[in-house]
Image (cartoon, rainbow, N blue to C red):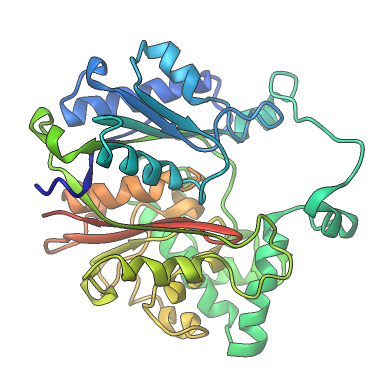
Amino acid sequence: MSSDYAYITGIGQSEVGMRLTRHPLSLTVDAVREALDEAGLDISQIDGVSTYPGRVSAMLGFSPVGADELVDALGIRASWYAGGMEISSQLGAVTAAAMAVRTGQARHVICFRTVYEAAAMARPEEYPMSRRGRVDGYSQWTAPFNALSAAVWTAQYAMRHVKQYGLTREQLAQIALTDRANALLNPRALVREPLTMDDYMSARMISTPLCLFDCDRYTDASTVIIVSAADALDEVSCTPVRIEAMAGSVERLSWDQAEWMACYPTGEDLWKRTDYTPADVDTVQLYDGFSFQAVAWLEGLGFCERGEGGRFIEGGTRIALDGELPLNTFGGQIGGGRLHGFGFAHEAVVQLRGKGEARQIQGDPRVAVCTSGGGPLATALLLVRD
């Protein structure tokens, strides 16, 4: 194994549900234990923790557990840890951990993302949201127009593709249909009901051209990725997955008036840092908080030209589980649950290790791309099983 790379070793995931009553820290510990068991590591060997965005007291459902809380709960002797929003989206926490182990700051880093949004909405007295008395910052350009949801912001970019490039709702539907079909094969997936084109086309609109089924839904869960140094791999018992390349981009922390979403420069940068090309990729696990984001990632990563995403996925066969580029094989966030970015890295490792069971890609997948974000900020990882 090359000492120039960081590796993903253990992966873990808690129960995935809606309106769970278990404490979010307990869910996080469950995911950590599963990751440790898979890696063959003990908590005493962990010397780093990385998360995004840390504990957010104003929105505890969005992020209820910080790095410091996990350090205290498990008695981790951390030589390095991090947790904050000042990174290039959720999987930026994995990027930070990779840089830490490559520079000798740590040997084994627990990266985690815990969400508790469904439970928080059900129990607002326990998880209240802070409300400001005034509108300022970049929200002054959206809140007065009731553009409070990222669905509205994403829809602007999707509508540009409709008007300029001919994207149709039938094409866009293929992301949701693919996600739902794959979710039915994933025992941990949040959504267990099939979805038809008729269901999709008759659903209520949220923000044109996005309908209800183009949106993920609030979820309660925790996902863990352990990043290990190359010279620490003799301590693990699982098949390591190499982080071949990483890229991230932040143009601005606002969706307003940016010509292209951050997934486009991020995708371009990813291929500048590796000899691999899009033609080498066996599966893509692409952020789909809203279905159009996955379309934009396909374009940004160079699997098709800008504006060609709709035609690339038309009919759904190319991105199906048995297609040439299987997409979001765990169900994505639309079917698998809003794991807020980390679910994509988790699933990429599952597929590269051949542990997908009913949803396992046929053949011998060795190269995967996973992403998070894609709007004003974005992260992409290229993962390889040597």
